[in-house]
Each structure stands twice: as structure tokens, then as C-alpha cells.
Image (cartoon, rainbow, N blue to C red; front, side, top):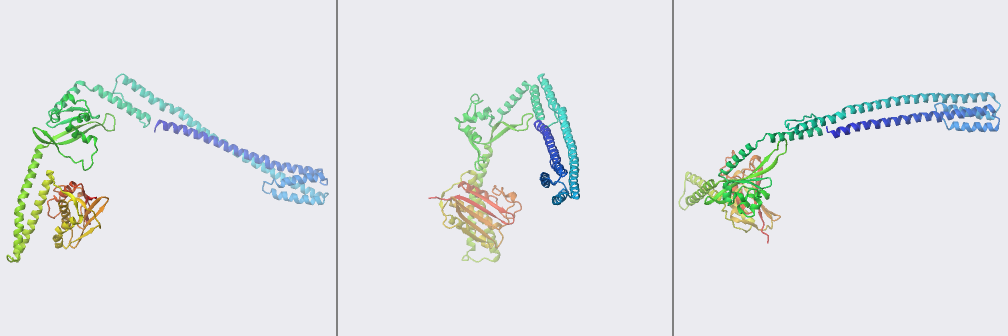
Length: 578
């Protein structure tokens, strides 16, 4: 508990006890006052009225003045009835007095009246005694409770007097002693407080300071210089360009490779802000753009940087390595700079280009014989050339399916080479969205009929034209419908939708197939990825190429799926606005 909270709690408790003591004292004084008033006012008045009535009776009732005196005090007594039984006695006194006024010389009535007055006086005297006892009880109770609360206040105050000064002064004394040890350069001194109050925080800060001072004292400048030289030698002999920055973006070091590709000199860059160097150096500007411009998912992809190095065009992959440390004795991590590392991937890029060219060449060369095979199959299926027996027809059908599969694979490989080489050729022009849908449906119509699958179009009326490459978009939509047919059950329905909203055209393909498991949703657009356990044929390139084609047109493609229910692929492209 914090010291402030302790003080508030202790002083607040003591204050509360004092308030309680004051309240109890006032309450009991008020009760005693009320009891005293009851004794002095009500019963005393009754005794006074009775005394005056006796005086009037003794002086002789037949006298006019005595009757008036008796009647006045009797009336007052009738309005001052406070005790049980007093009302009946007063009524009897009234009745006897009325009789006496009719016969003033009847001694028996006088005697009865005197007895009535005596009974009333005796009743009130007994009441006075009872109320006196009540007041005495109240006084005793007041003394008890006031004494109890007062004793409690004394105990609490005495406890605070004994403990509170020590709780505050002792830690200060111990801390002062430890500070004196630090002054004497005894940096191994530590303070240990068990509490979690301000003294505990102060002890923690003191120990952190002492630990840092001890580390600084134990450090050796020669060792630090040797380590610095070792690191500089290591960095300068790296074959990859390396640039080191501090937390203010000032250049700490640049190795020889970095200086060579940027055409800079070491004396002109060390200690300078890298943004100042970037003003006059295009390459440095391209290297640090990520430090000052927040990236989006579209721009955050790592793209190789093309730099002229080693007398040829070279490719480098940039990596920003932040340097974060947790200072001694602290818990929060802080940034002290970063390193820009350029990894030379030119050999891998050359191999990738060779692979892409090889695939493009092979795919292109395969298309011609596959097309010849398809034409020969069409001739064999022509009845005018001759009839085939059942076994020959099965062989021709099998060859036709394999040739179609090969043709599709070669087409995907050729599209992939465009994607990998970055040479996707687009012709984005206003196009009728319904024509793209109808083309894709016609391309999959026969396959769908073979599985008794119905292709249903849900198109919004009065659609504007879409800004798209008709060929590439048709290929993507055809591929999505083909996948839907492949993974859907027989006698099911595939819905192809097209609508416009807020300047966008949306194409969608919805099936009721097996769906996609949640763990594979973020991987289905990866190249060569196929869902584990699937028995359907495919290269794993179609969705990746589709994504690249759509994004190259400034659009997006996404999927929503539920395992066992089906999937919906949605393409979003821009409208053509006149």
C-alpha cells in the first residue's frame, strides 16, 4: 500500500472515530435533555396544579374566588394528562367537583376530592421517580459508549504515534545510508524494501541506478574499442551492402559494398541524416522510402530492387532490421536504430528467369502438337471418315480428355510465365460485363451438363460497362466456374452473379460443393497450392494466376467459404463512367 494511502487511511480512521465520539456525545446529551424536560415540565406542572386545587379546597369552596382558582387549575390539569391512569383520576376529580358545587357543605364530597387530588399527585410523583431512573440509565449508557469510543480513539492515536513515524523515517534513514555508500563508489550497495509503496518504487529506481553505475564502472574502454573494431571489420567485409542508422536516422556506418552501389564516400555520409543524403541520391531515396511512408497490403510485398552493380544489372532484396534493446533494470523495450541490409539475389533471379523462359518455351512448343492431336481426334470422331467401334470410341474419348488437360496446363504455364516475368499485357477497355459472363458459361457448359449441373445467371439490370481486359477477365471467370463444376456435386446449381455498386462491378461464382477448411483460406491463392487430400486434378496455378490478372487490372478477388456448405468467389473491377 502506498504511503499516501496509509496516511489517508490512518488519519481518516482517527477522524471518523472523533466524529463518531462527537456524534454519540451529542446524541446522549440530547436524550438526557429530553428526559430531564419530561421530569421538569409535565409532572411538575401537574403537582403544581394539584397543590393550588388543595389550597382552594382548604380555603373553602363556597367562596367565589376559591371556585375560580379550583376551576382554572382543574382545566389546566385536564390539558396536562401524560401518565397512564391520570385521565381516569382527573375525570373522577371533575365529577366530584361538579357535585361539590351543587352541595358546597358536603364533607364527604370534600374528602373524596382531597383523595382524588392526592391520587393524582402520587401518580405523578411515581412517574417522576420512573423518569429519573430512565435518565440515570441513559446517563450510564452515555458514559459507557463515550468511554468506549474515547478509549478506541486513544488506542488508535497511540498506535499511530508509535508506528507511523518509524514507517516513514526508517526507510528514509536506510536509503540515506545507501546513498552515502554510492557516494563512496560502493556501487554494489542495494536497498531492499518489502513494501509496495513509494519507498518500494524508490528502492527499485535506486537499485537500477546502482546496477547501471556498477556496469559502467566494470566496463573497460579498451575492450569496447576492440569490440567496435571487430564489428566494423566484420561489416566492411560482408559481400552484401549494409547501412546502419541510429534512432535519429543518422548514418552510423556504411560498408564498402553499400558505398560502391550508391557511389558515395564515407567521409560525406557518416553522422549525416540519411534523408539529407537521399535528397541527392535516387538509390538511397528508394531504400529509405519505407521508413517515412506507411505501407499498405498492396505495397508491402517485397519486390527486388534492380541496381547496376558488378558491371551488370543486379537484383537485391531489401530487409529493414530494427535494433531494439531493454535497458538495464528497465522493462520497456526501446528502439536505438536499424540496419538496412541488401541481399544480392542476382544468381537466383537469373536461375528464375532461365526457368521461366524454359517453361514458356516448352509450353509454347507443346501447344502445337497438342492442337494437332485435338484436330486429329475431331477427324476420328467425324462419322464421314468412318465409324469406330465401342473400344475405339472409349480410347478417343480418353485421349481427348488427356489432350484437353494438357492444353489447359500449358495455357496456365504460359500465363504463369507472364506473371513471373512481370510482362502481363493488358488491354483495359470498357467491356460489356454480361458478355464476359456468357463467354465463361459457354466455355464450361458441356462439362457442367456432363455432371447434370445447372449454371444460373443472376445479373442486375442496366449494368454499366466494366473497365477490364476482356480476355484475361473471361479466363479468370472461366477458371472459377470450372473449379466450381469440378468440386460440386451432381444435380447441383452454380450461381454466376454480376452487379454494380458504388462505381464497382462485382462478378461472383457460388457453388454448393465441399467448401474450403478455414486453415486453408489464406493459402488457396498461393502458387502450386492444392488443398491436402483432394482427389481432383490440377496444377495449383489457376487461382494464383487469376489473382495476378485481376490485381493487374486494379481489381480484387476474394473468397468466402464454409466447409461442407460451399464457396463464393467474388471479383471486383471498376465501372466505366462516362
